[in-house]
Length: 403
Image (cartoon, rainbow, N blue to C red):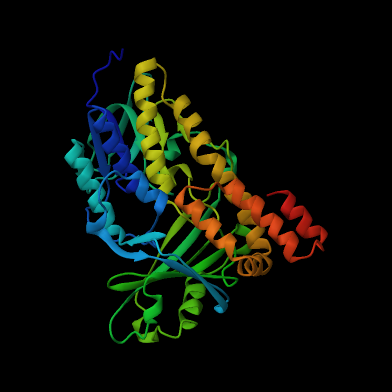
């Protein structure tokens, strides 16, 4: 039984998908919940805004008010050449504009009873024996029994926790431009409901074209290491120039953001009464950069861990760390190993994918949640051996052995 009277049971910092979901579930469980966001919503968020089917399945309400497009296929290319496509009769993904999507999720949280505080930046977090205190830029302070950090890749909350050393310098970068989709853009009609993914041009990453109602979200992203410094803007400009339907005069502002890298199954995501979710916890698919699913999933798990901690009278960090390792990190571990292989042998991986179309459909099942990364990777390794007729170099053998 908690003896100390706090302002709230739970404070959530950051109102993106992970934060708003964590807050909504905490309130649903009857916890007095405050959601603090430094921006005022709706606000623009640089993001491809692609929701996988498993993401949609997590949310228990109708998303149609904010869906900007329904996707039925994917086009793949290697350096914008040698393309092939896969198509489905059923939707494989949904596209959203993040300002609309995030606002929608905040409204759902507020309806559940969450108190929302916008335009307030958390500048300091201090954990004590029975409480956590947050301090805002304007000097106000609030105390809670538990704190959930959902404040992105440069999380203020995460800096409070003693994290694994591998995390240092482990961020990537994505940058994109929104091209207005009007009659002056000769975008192929047949590609209005497919996404385009291009490999081979971006180090440790790829380029994308996501067609939405009013614009094309076009960007590049990759896990760029310190040893290989690049200028993401120049890569995006080159990618845009290679797309015949994008006039140079239509290229508007480019917005970038950090990509937090998942780095280890045992990476620390919690400490005592403080739990990290989404980008703040470095929970992102290292192969294709999906972060929204892991933000929402970890937000749900954080709320469940707090409830478990209250029922069992234990600190929530233990059940939360265990839940993340079981439900999230195990799959991301396989994605990380496979991404290292793909970005080291990109052309081989691309040709194998093109030669065996069932691999593309199997990957869609991973995004849907009906197949695991482990099963997918095993099938790909077998197909690469078939494709190479067993004649694998020592470098390829070593790289495959690590996946």
